[in-house]
Length: 375
Ligand SMILES: Cc1ncc(COP(=O)(O)O)c(C=O)c1O
Image (cartoon, rainbow, N blue to C red; front, side, top):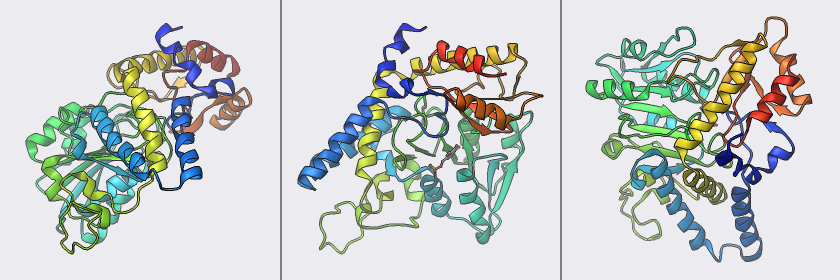
């Protein structure tokens, strides 16, 4: 029980249908987000684009909220289509020379692999950092960085086992070496505080559909102000310019901020959902959300260990997250996942085991039911 977190439970109708422990995959909407989306859909059903400018304002407000979430200026935020788009803006935007390299961890989600492997055709060497005992160590990353490293690309939290990277140390060390840092933050934004300035992050990308509790295809991309002019644009179109609605102006004057990476007609519906979710999470308080998520995951880890399950996620102080992966010597991960689903618990298979990822509105009662269902 947690009186603070329990207040939010009624905003999650999913709790009536499922014990939903799968926010690292695709999250359910909270009622406030669903209501905002319904208002948008109804307005377009009844009025078409008559009120378009009102909805456009929501986009600018979303930029402000995203800036608050990651401690950046709103002008440093572009609203993009997904995490991969942000990675590609960086991969295709940097000025590569044959023989340059990009450093990235092993076992990354492909959205933080393929955009970099795609650079091999330009003579760029991908340098893969192996994990040690499931952990990505900062020294191992730094050991592969040299004078030809143009960017280091990491995830804030590993999707397979939930290991949380020490971004502050990594950012500080890379900053001292003059190497930009790209962060795929989809597995941490929404429940782990982010401060792009303190972590010396140059670029960050995350879609809304996981811990941010927002629709799919509504993402944010951060480009630090001092990196803006260092990125060429592989894609550029009418919305990338300073005054997009001066259709007869032949000059190509780019928008002053990260908005220049938004090419054409945006996903307004997705942004409306992202806006409502960001507002909800920021109002609730990311620090308190983190504390609660870690509490619930700890209860699961303790209960699982007591029942003879093996925890595959690193569990030292500072490296825990909302993701917990586990297995059992006598039961296949598939059979455990299916048994959980039959009992009303949504989990998935990742990292060689069953992965659970509860959010702050989940509770200990649900953890107990989850433990009871497991053999
Ligand atoms: C670490 C990580 N990055 C990215 C994604 C998704 O990428 P995108 O938003 O481009 O679909 C996922 C999960 O789907 C993920 O776990």
